[in-house]
Image (cartoon, rainbow, N blue to C red; front, side, top):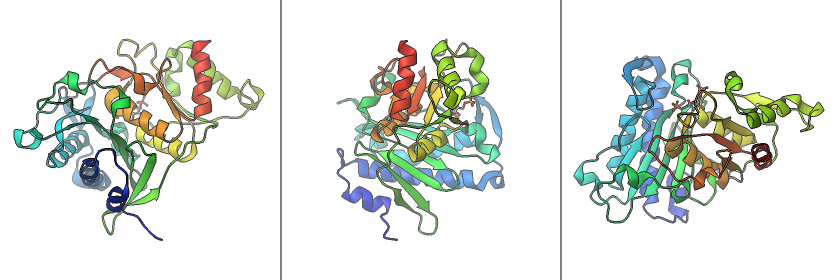
Length: 330
Ligand code: FBP
């Protein structure tokens, strides 16, 4: 097989920002280091939870913190970033002067998405998003990070599953790379990923059904009615409880992923976080021909109000997301 490594791909790619070469290379290294920690599982005795809670009020897993520290350390050394923000930290990370003085970008990330699965040996991942740092800012404040998803210069995730993969976009389509353990290289295995416009597979946490709003109730009921119902086709369901794994499945074989706001999450605004979950995934999905909405508008057009803001998420195959919009507008 004629293989293209990530390094070769980045050398030949037309990147809007030349610095992306170094930033993506550092992110790949950090994800490889996290993959080692995750793959070793119970061997390292790091499968448990900590007493501590993160800003979301979630009990932190040991691996949440280990992954967070690895991602911070390994990405600050390149000197590309003026600031970083993570799901595991209340405030933006204050970087040492020597690392941020020439930083022109901001890195946002979820170091270990789906971490409730980590001690179950199910797929987990790392999600990342890169923004430009506003001009002249060397000590970015929260407000400097609050840019719409449409301002991202790079977005992606690493998936620690049956194989370790890195999937990313810089605005030139979505490309997937598989880690070749012998060489330590990420090799291009999924070039120009495209999401099928039509699909019959949905992913939603059905256990929350009683708290859903009417449009979601109706859409899921119509999917369940199958070929005898108004949609005239049978639907299948999946739920991995790991957004990275759900989005990866959709990039491979289509479908929709939904995490609606419901009666239990209305006050919080939803379950998933805009800045380092919804925005990067929305850009990947759109770059692969799908759609991503919060039920009312395109996720990438949302003006962020907070670093850890939560939003409803509906993303995936174009025809299904457009159909869902008609339920919301009915
Ligand atoms: P974190 O693991 O990063 O907190 O992410 C949230 C998440 O695990 C998503 O990956 C997943 O889609 C969802 O929560 C699962 O929710 P639930 O626990 O309701 O199944």
